[in-house]
Amino acid sequence: MLCAGCDEVGRGPLAGDVVAAAVILDPAKIISGLDDSKKLTEKKRELLFDEIQAKAMSWCIARASVAEIDSLNILQASLLAMTRAVQGLHIEPEHVLVDGNKLPKWKYTAEAVVKGDSRVAAISAASILAKVTRDREMIQLDKVYPGYGFADHKGYPTKVHMEALERLGITPIHRQSYAPVRVKIEQIALF
Image 1: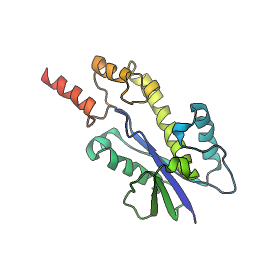
Image 2: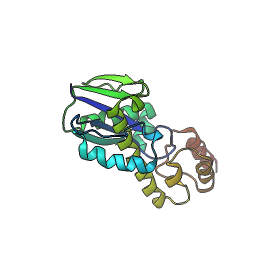
Image 3: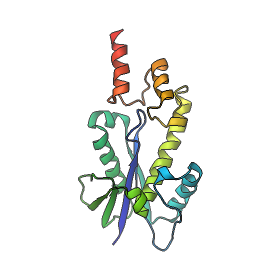
Image 4: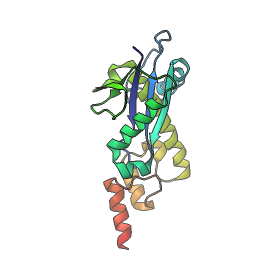
């Protein structure tokens, strides 16, 4: 059975898109070292990113924008990004394994796999593609919006990020539906 793995990254950050990937691995081209992207070093993720793209039968990286996150909510935006990733595969899968406990509403037969990014190679590969892509984007956005520390915290609500929000205000890449950003908007509106 032709099976795709699918995962997303970026549900928790206050800024940036949520990024998803779908991967169909080629059983004839083994990729060693696949694991949950969060358990791998940045260097290892970068190496695996290139190897996955070179050896997979099919892969696709997709996203849901900050505006979509704010209008839909993060869960629905994550499911949308995963749907786009699977639909973007140039080979249609017969079955999709999705990391987590929720499935998009789509035409594919699918199974949600809790901790799938550690247990299923194709989901691990998708996790790596999504994380490396999002991390690279946040590093670029750090240059566009200096002073926030996006290259380091990738948009997560760290102390540095919260202090920067207080000091510098919000940017167009901040998720306005997230409480810390919404509070900042409300504070601005009072003045």
